[in-house]
Picture 1 (cartoon, rainbow, N blue to C red):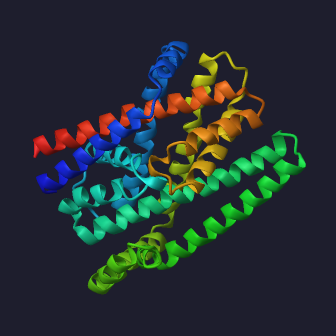
Picture 2 (picture 1 turned 30 degrees about the vertical axis):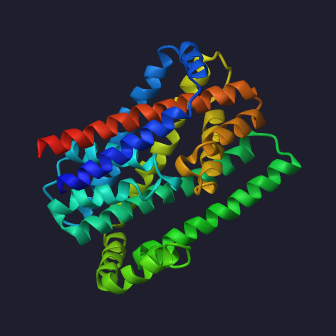
Length: 327
């Protein structure tokens, strides 16, 4: 990737990191870190292993498309930096994906890099729908239902099944053209999207063909990648468990899964909020209190997770800078 593009991604991330940090209440943050103590170090360290799972899932997708000179350690750095940029954008997308494509294209070409990045992004989101649906099933067997929760779970089930059907269709036929076509209906972007489709229709068609062929010809690799991403969702509830243990809250790991599931669903439904500021915090507050925890506990969990994102965003940006210097 050209140095000016790497500089652009780096300074964009720095600006967003500053905005994210400015939203924190300093006194409240210090108090939360004092309460959690070394458990905060455990929360941050946990993501060293979770990003290994993310990287391995993406690595499988890249290798399924043919031989490549990509090293796992290098791909791990790009994965961390990509997620760091994703934290900065609404819905967690459109920030890290262009960066990943630009870095990867120098080794395997633009079209193959684009298809692998899009396919991995699809798999990452696809696993969320399965995680939410799995949470509904577990909730039905472990928690007491009320009229309100029954209605919510029904709506959540319909939403998840619809999302799963949409992505299965996208895997079979490709999703690049559909995704860009959606932009044609968004104000201020539709003019650019129309011109982009006209200029790159053949390339988009090729990317969709590659996505469909990767899914069709490498079913084992596809299911392995989805399973890894699903396991990553399940294991990421450990950070909530760590925080609640530090606060001496008597909760089960299943409760932590429910908190994570309902919070991420709520935050992703508010994808249009820049940086998801307030959306995720509100999700933690609602899900924690609904499961019998106090409101202050939900706020602390939300703040610790936000601090963890800040730390890993800084690490990801540092890796972008080191990659630029290495080149």
